[in-house]
Amino acid sequence: MPAPERIPAGSVTVQDPVELLTRGELTVRGRIREASNAVLYCTVAYEGREAACVYKPVAGERPLWDFPDGTLAQREVAAYEVSLATGWDLVPPTVLRQGPHGEGMCQLWIEDSGDAELLALVDGEEAGEGWKAVGLAQVDEERTALLVHADDVRLRRLAVLDAVINNSDRKGGHLLAADGRLYGIDHGVTFHAENKLRTLLWGWAGEPLTDEAVEVLRSLRDGLKEGAALAERLGGLITGAETEALRARVAALLESGRHPEPSGDWPAIPWPPV
Image (cartoon, rainbow, N blue to C red):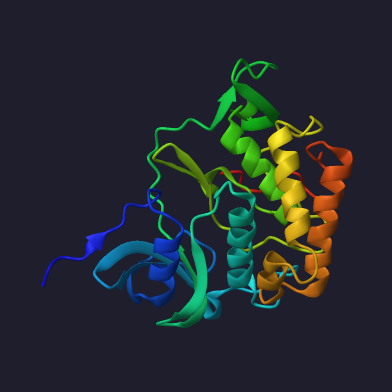
């Protein structure tokens, strides 16, 4: 029997990994112990193809005070659907399926190349060329430094996506680079009906949105209308109130024409930041 065809993460078309993740045989290889919820490293194989993936069973979710209803897996899939609709493909292919431990989220594994410098701490009050300032960070008892992120078009797109999906946990460790592309992962705490945006990507706060972002937001607005394909897909993943809040966030971004700023009603940066 020939060896299964390995699918390199980050270099496949959308159609291939979605079918593989949905229909393939899921085999658990280990557990990622650093995660707060059950996160299982797996392989998935289908018709001679195989890829690594992450499987997060609903049964392994720990209830959160503001996300208490065991829907983190569905929110991860919803984030993928919105990312796909933007055309930016910033979230790895993600599906909801049955697995060895029941229903859960299954996402293509992205191996971080480690060659993209996206975050840094710098001395002084200026971010420097090619960087955007986030804020001061306490390095130790005697030293503070300026937290900065790269002035990168891919990060800027992700900042828009996070504002749309109301991501309350955009940490540095949730950014992966592979084959020249940038991915965001871990979207279980998104789509809340209340404003909960917490992110390290505040560097563009208050700045005008790019023309590209405005066009994407207009397309999302159309896709979220009642009866539209995206709205129908999201209807099985998040609540009606959350869908209405999603529409309102898209409308607000289009009305302001600017990247959002911290509201002051919610911690602006997640902890720990990395």
